[in-house]
Image (tube, rainbow, N blue to C red; front, top):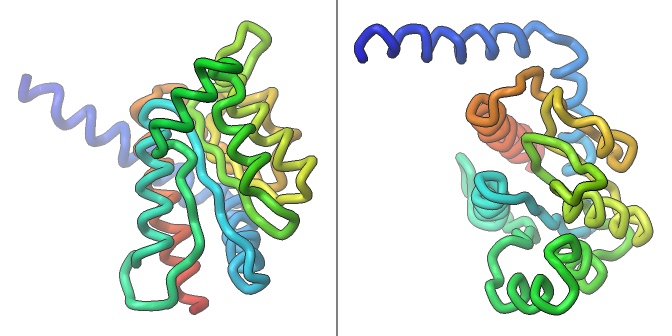
Length: 194
């Protein structure tokens, strides 16, 4: 057991070293940060969603924006679309899970808003993460900007977002860990501007 600890940590350290030196990756973060800043400055709101562990991260992200990250500042209007059990179950039951986020975006999203979707995988015609695909599609129809926290497995969703952030990994656990760091980094950059 003890022999597994160091390789586990070194794998993560190696990934962070790789992305810190990758100009494409850091440029994706800068682009996403600019979209968040523009949304806040124009009075828009931020809608965040994802499945499974990404749903929890969506909630975490919204909490950091509404409450605070590292400093006291104005509240940012942000909503995690993963939290209302009545909406989630009614929409899934009536029209299918693939519409669970897009229906909320239809109701809440307006031009000038920003949607942020998180997934460690991709959407496909079999229905896998198709709710993420539908959410971005409806956001585009509404005139909202979008950020996707993705991985190197993500292909079909890339053209649906304005700012894809692609974690160069295939391990779900590693991707989720980097997504959490990206969330904190985006909050850090946002608070520097306020």
